[in-house]
Image 1 (cartoon, rainbow, N blue to C red):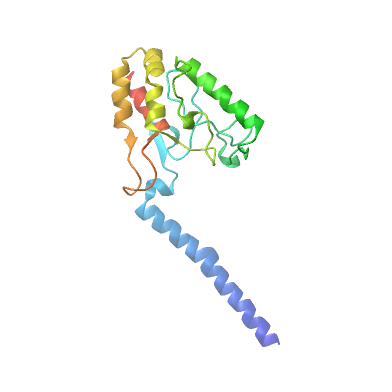
Image 2 (image 1 turned 90 degrees about the vertical axis):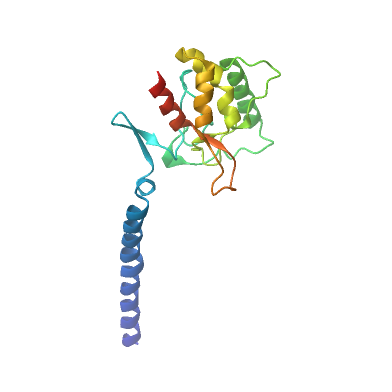
Length: 191
């Protein structure tokens, strides 16, 4: 019996060292070697200052910036340690009220009429609450507001949006999208 127990303890130690130490160190080293930016969080720096990760949405509320998706992550949203959706279902009155309020806000901020369509990604939070992208339609809808707030031509802002449209991943996965943080960083370089 002792021989079996000692053998089991040795196997536990060997597997712990392999799976708990060697494998994680090897994968971390390989990731740092092959994909250093992604392994370090895809952090973006502007003028020597860290401004965020291109993988995590941020709350932009200033009229001179493009706004991203609403967030239900954490008490105030955009909390990476509380990543989650609201878990409100389609029959939830709170969800309906929140969406209607967001639609009203988008129409008011972007000077849209009642008949103008507001893209759903500007009024519905993503499942993680941290989605850094919006659709090209959502970005183009905000062009007039951003241009007016910055005192530049809408055409100049529209061109910037066009330059920041990302294609589908691997050529066929997902939809075209615009990274809000990268677009806002590019805006800051204009004026």
